[in-house]
Image 1 (tube, rainbow, N blue to C red):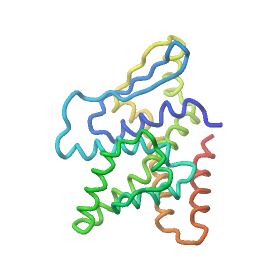
Image 2: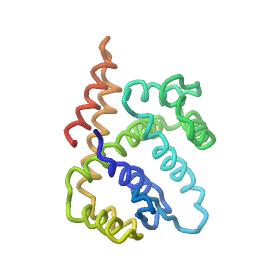
Image 3: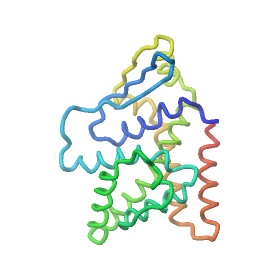
Image 4: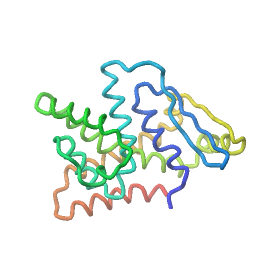
Length: 216
């Protein structure tokens, strides 16, 4: 069973790392003792260059729940979207995804596909990998049970209060877990894009499950 605190750190780690206007992370517990977290943003409009980064960060966060348990089909869906087609797998089943943002990313990728294929290739890999990264990093942070993670839990549980931490400090405190999760996600995306055996789906999904299981 996945530790219930995993989700507490999963989505905020994505947005803190990749949203250009992320300012702080807020953790709190409600009257029922349930723990919550959210990212607090700068109250300014993103620049034209930042707008795409905002779309990518938010979509990567929203896609987290679709990346498992069938990571192979998830990546296949992302490939379809980047080619202007409709997904039919786990991405299509996400009920609260911002399709307008995802279409903007897809249009951007299709426009630049022939003009700058290397950048579009990196973007495709990023959209495939970051949703899985969010699952891995949350489990890593919780499984390490570090003093910094335990302090956050203690503050919002014992006092039933709110704990705020700056986004940059959050990233520094959990830099090791963030980098490790990012590297593991990159390896899995590379495996998906480089595996062409008949049982590729089984192989990739087994690798994704192994990456998560070893953190539990």
